[in-house]
Length: 178
Picture (cartoon, rainbow, N blue to C red):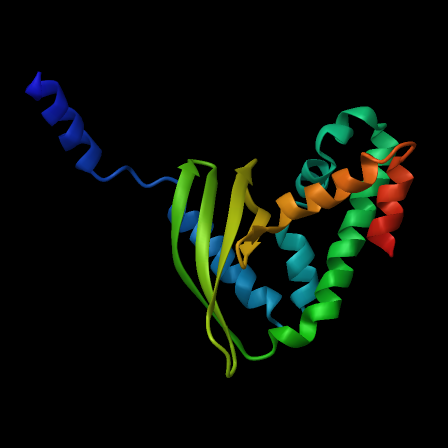
């Protein structure tokens, strides 16, 4: 009885093989440097995010009910929404230090990378980035800041719009554009 228990405890104490960690961390380290660049930051911001995946996730159950054209229009509006959000907050990116703390691998192609972001003269904040590798390329699919996963929050907001009686994808697109 104790042998299986002992073996299980010993196995659990062994370090797991590294999967995504170093690659995912390197992607976030480079992305953070680029995002906080005053000239190329917006391009890096929208280029680092897997916009089609996040947009589709944001649609939730409603993604099955729309046409390919509607999904493409929603994704384009979502891309513009992200760019506008970046532009609205770009002043907060001046003189920011970003340190990659580590990562937790959820699978060989899915990792959560933890960073500490310290704006000049302010306390450091923890920001976690969920990155997924597809076709050998790592992309951000969610960011957790102040306890909120932003894609999950966006999904809730889009659902609140599309769950209204007679709501259409046009209502969600209009909300992203406002």
